[in-house]
Image (cartoon, rainbow, N blue to C red; front, side, top):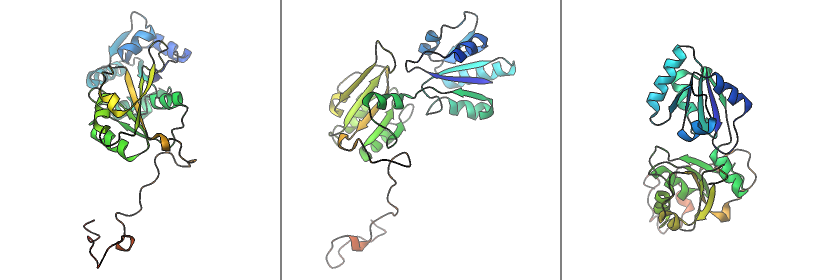
Length: 245
């Protein structure tokens, strides 16, 4: 069995997590998670970097019927390591104990609901999709990564979405280092934000509070590809045909 504990947003490890760590044959996690957990000296540990070596080590440990504990940030089932573990070992071999995600924490710091937000990951992915989503929606959370942080996002939005506000959340849950800063895209582009940023909120503050929702996420898009010719003002049929539009 692989037990996955969500941590990293300030909450101390639960008693269950401490007990699991004491019995673990292998503990996998980011360097900061392993340091905070105060592991027994004898336990084998792997600092997460490239994922493949960690997965191979987990497989070897499972073959020896040793307990594996994985420490991850926030909710590890939300753009986290649970996907890779389930794909490799099967969901039935996972015992997931989620924490509060960085997205939920960031919106909580602002006192905003986020059932109407769009969440997009730029961690290990091209930034282009995140930029397009930020241009198209009034409330977006972007999970960041190296090369796809606040500076890069701000630079991409500065000329076309200057009215947006970027809320940069760094070291969430760390009482000594947590920062939640509101900046313009241009201001974000001009700063070095370091490595502690985990999420950036991109807001059109005039539309930050949407009406009460029944279905989470952005409003549904149009139910057709293009407007009918009769919905345009035109003269003597001087209009591009439907297929062209």
